[in-house]
Amino acid sequence: MLNTWLKKYPNKICMQRLAGSFTGRIARTTGLATYASTTMPRPEITIQGAPDFTDTMHYRSPSRLGGETRRLIPRVLNQYITAIFCFAIFFGASASHAEQVVVYSARIEQLIKPMFDAFTKDTGINVKFVTDKEGPLLARLKAEGKNTPADMLITSDAGNLWEAAQEGLLRPVESKMLQENVPAYLHDPRNQWFGLSVRARTIIYNTQKVKPSDLSTYEALAEPQWKGRLCLRTSKKVYNQSLVAMMIAEHGAVRTEEIIKGWVANLAIDPLSDETKAMEFVAAGRCDVTIANSYYYGRLMQKNPALPLAIFWPNQEGSGVHVNISGAGITKYAHNVPAATRLLEFLSSEKAQNLFADVNMEYPVNPRVKPDPTVAAWGTFKQNTINVTTAGELQAEAVKLMDRAGYR
Figure 1 (cartoon, one colour):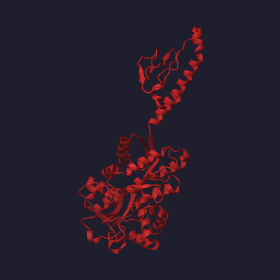
Figure 2 (figure 1 turned 135 degrees about the horizontal axis):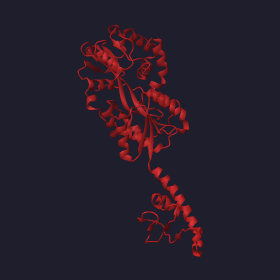
Figure 3 (figure 1 turned 120 degrees about the horizontal axis):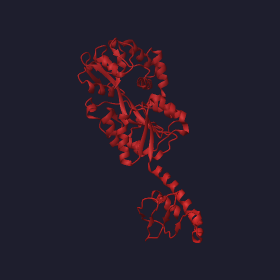
Figure 4 (figure 1 turned 45 degrees about the vertical axis):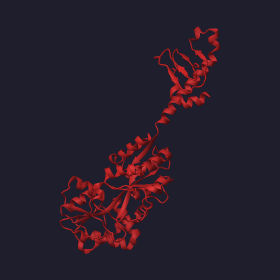
């Protein structure tokens, strides 16, 4: 009975000191237990639902033991041991009460913390997170193995999530909520990871030099009319690797290599290190068009709305705009799978998806959530619904193809 009660009230029983001279009194008081200490301040604590105890024990110096007190020594030792176990239960219970999920995130703090704070507010579950680049995080998960503290991995691009799953770093998640909130083409067919936001890879053009009617598809940028007018980010970045992987899935390797060779032939300058720089070159007239993720365009235009740039949605009469995701999966050796599952479900919910839309200028993965008004102003578009897993499955082939085509 005592053990059951101790587990039920672990933070209330452990109020007696274990060292020094003290008197503990446990008395029957109409179903209440009352504690008082003589060597500490004397607040009395009453606990509803306490068991019946009628024992009174006195602990004194051995030189002052009398006959009656001597007979109480076994009882004293028993109570002393009980108190020690009580402290162990107390500290164990305190740790368990502070439930938490540990997240490794390749997304920066400002893009994820608002969602984590909202989750903690709703559930009481704390979220601790580490941020780093995708490569180091995956390497860390591999090195830590069963000893990893991470319950969840968040990263950008389906190719990175596919790699994590292939390396055995993630586990399947069975969740009706996730299936309802995340369209099938935006999550792993084996349910090891799920998209949380959508990034559209689109065409950005100089409004002073290009008319919308001049544009049509990604593939058309390989045509001679664009010679010396195209800027591109380097092929070493995963976003371009994923785009080419999806093109291989759609057109086959031979046709895709022809397209990439056409892009290379039309370059105005060597490939650039980032997309913001490519768009700035377009705005400055160094080139006329580029391919970029839509949120990069949004962030640049927020800083300088006077730039002569506009967004164009390609392939609308065909397969649709290439989309990719940021997403998450629960790690294979997660310590708190139930709480991590709750967090993943929350991140796909309408509440969290609205936060995603507000802070990162990406598109919600949940079809019931509208994009941020700034993003919505760019217009609606048809998405390519080839499963984004393809970006990972064909990534290695895409890298080799771009190398053969001279795309650096």
